[in-house]
Image 1: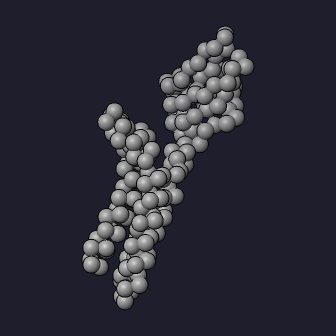
Image 2: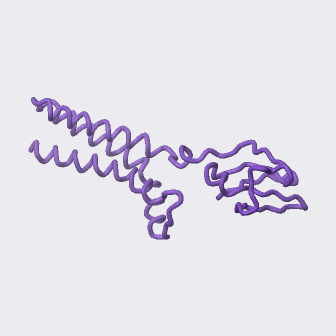
Image 3: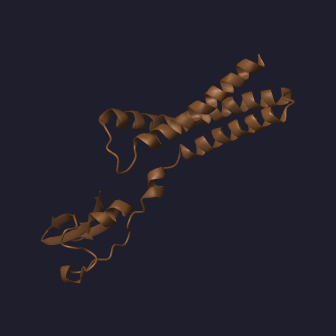
Length: 161
C-alpha cells in the first residue's frame, strides 16, 4: 500500500512540475514556435494555477500519510523534496516568467536622429508614424526590454518586439 501511495506522490509531483515547466520551455524567446506548441503552452498555463493547487493538497495529504509511516531519512528527504516541488510549482504557476526576462521600458528617452550615436545606419529599428510624429525603436534594445510604453501625438502606445 505504501508503494502505491509513494508512486502516486511521485506522479503528482512530476505532473505539477511539468504543468509549469512545459509552457516555459515551449514559449522561449528568440526561438521559433509553432501554433501547436503555443496552443499547448497556453492551455497548460490556463489550467496550471488550479491544477497545481489541487496537486499540492492531494500530494500534501499523501506525503503526511507516508511521513507517519516513514522511518528512514532517505524517505523523509524524498517526501520533503516532493512537498517543496509541489509548493514551488503552485507559486510559479501564478507567475509570468516572461516579466522576469523582459523589463518593459516605462519611460523611454528619445533623441533626434543627429544625436542618436548609439544607433548605426545598419541597425534594424521598429518604426511608428502616427499623426505626423515618427519614432524609431532599435531592435537591439527592444530585444531586451521587449515592451516600450510610449505616447505619440498624445496617444498611448505599447510597442513590442
